[in-house]
Length: 122
Image 1 (cartoon, helix red, strand yellow):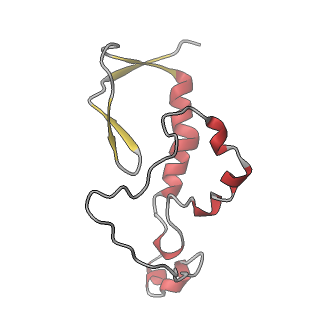
Image 2: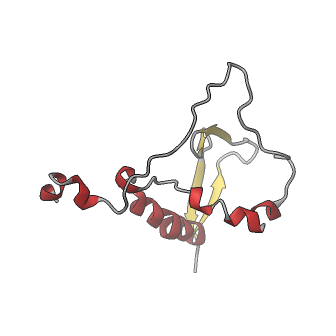
């Protein structure tokens, strides 16, 4: 691995592509983006033919030279560990009346939401 670091091209899976874009600076207080009908429950909005066109823009772990080195661990967690915990454990809130609190980052992160888990009996 150390010898690869001397040759940065050896670790690449794809070449960088220079984006052609114009920088636009929004004034303070301007709404830059908002979801149309965000409060309306409509799961079909993600199943339309047009939504498939957006798949190429979904790169949560980056790509090319800037790919996240932990993406494989994250994918294992998402596809194996989390479903196993949900399958094998009953998870309940310590106080069922307490509403969960969230912080919105790139993803939503729960905090101040104590829970406990009990292994399910076979």
